[in-house]
Amino acid sequence: MAGNGAKSSYWRGVRDGMPFILVLIPFATLFGVAATEAGLNIVETLAFSVVVVAGAAQFTALQLMTEQAPTLVVLASALAVNMRMAMYSASITPHLGGLPLWKRAATAYCLVDQSYASAVLDYEQRPDQTPDQKFAYFFGVCTPIIPLWSVFTLIGALVGEAIPPELGLDFALPIAFVAMIAPALRTRAHVAAAFAAVVGALAFAWLPWNLGLIVGGLAGMAAGAEIERRMGA
Image (cartoon, rainbow, N blue to C red; front, side, top):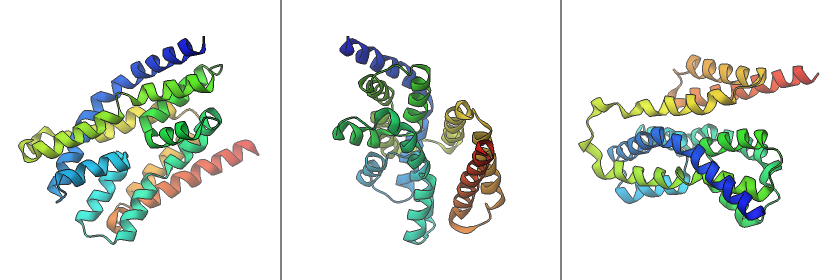
């Protein structure tokens, strides 16, 4: 039955999304702390997480705002960090693009690194799933992730200075990205793009307002595209 299939897919997604909580909690809490230390009040901090739902872009924008960077640079940097979402959308459209508008809108809101990485792997492993089953799986992954992102942002904003700096909550950021990105590096183009992006970002880290991130992102996209072009030639 289609209903049972969708239900099974949903709970499989919930199960696959649960491990991300381990890095999400310190990550979201750290953002709440950092945002309040940067001068945002609790409502602004919570609204930032609820509306944007993009940790890396939020940290980037927050840092640039504290450095009094021009608004255009803040927006460009945040968009550059989130540029991968456009590629995520293009990749996931063949699976979910035929769904009703409200489901596509909900998918767009909940499209984050964790939900994308899990969904793509699941769709590849189970290509016979119906669109409803794929949608159910996607939201199963999101169920333990999206609400907790806002909840622990709020907790971080509320506890603020009570968290001692020596706890080093910022460890969650690199761990989260390594855990998400490593399984996705399955082709030479993926590896080349990741390598070029890292090298570019490090080489141009001296640029003001974190513009090195934009350079690194562009370098990664160019390298990945070039490798794919050569492989397809």
